[in-house]
Length: 462
Image: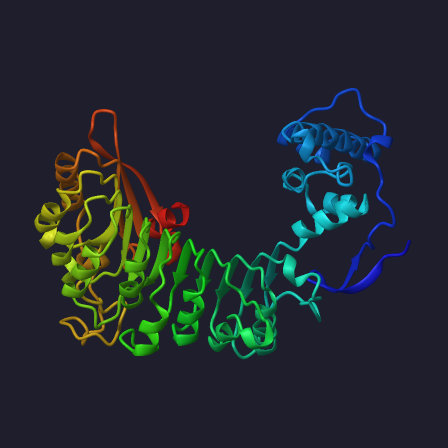
């Protein structure tokens, strides 16, 4: 039967196999001498050096064995004769995780049941980029299968058509659980159209668990997030366009997030979110020029006892006094290191009896003239900038001494990382040895902010 050409998420001319006319019974296929069970067996079938027919036969035999094991847990009075010929959906999904896309397309034509289950895997995650040709239309049958969408906007002028198409598509993906939007140019009013509308029976998008967004924080976005009661991870790296003291925001931000555990947001937004997140474990904060040390101290006192990781994305030294209010449950802290204030910082970190990992970002008190040629300085008029070693914020001897004292005051410390992201673009790591001493183990380059110690540890926190 010839393949039918149609528009799908794989491109305007993606050829999809039609659904089989009848269900093929796996038991009719020849059974190999062995019938292994488990993840490793399926993986070697799909990629081993055996014939296609033998591979398919062995896969069906394994599925038969897995179906029999799954049915052993079902009581006889709960067995439905009309569905006993089908595999449990959970078993199929477990098997399909070990198949590559080519093998999935081969399984697609095996039976109607396989056709439906494989499509759930193929359409699960939708990645939209202006560099890749997009489908002309997402059918109403395919849209509910999409559970995660990753949208890359690109240049706001050259990719205007792509951005518009993505904004029109998002409200149709009603079963989404994950949204990731990177790049500038997204109209936040689109989130308003994703909310439930009782007057036209639109159910809206209300099952988001992970939300990452690079764009302005405005009222439509706040209302959309307020409707996501299953949210577990929130990341917004942007500016705020609406005052959080307004009546509209206070009305929207009042229902709790019982599952929210990982948050990366501006401090102004965090003040409204933290009281609503009783199980918050990881928090990363960014700041603007209006945030004071008193504001940060008040935020620290509102953190729940479940908090484990705290990242302060700033090099401002005036926040040091707020460290006196750090929660005692912290296991990881990323903050600013100022050599002149190192004794005071040790005093604030000593009560943290569970602290294991510390990240210190070297504070630069001023922008050197060799980076900013317009800076005023003694050598600026002569056109000769100072040496980078002279302008470096801290010496190795100072850091070694601070880390040794920190280990003696906080015996639970396992590692300390020091990032100098302005001058040397280097990072250093100290680890505790068996004798309890802190030794430098690694030096690495920092080419981008995401290569820094805080960003790397944040990406693996759960």
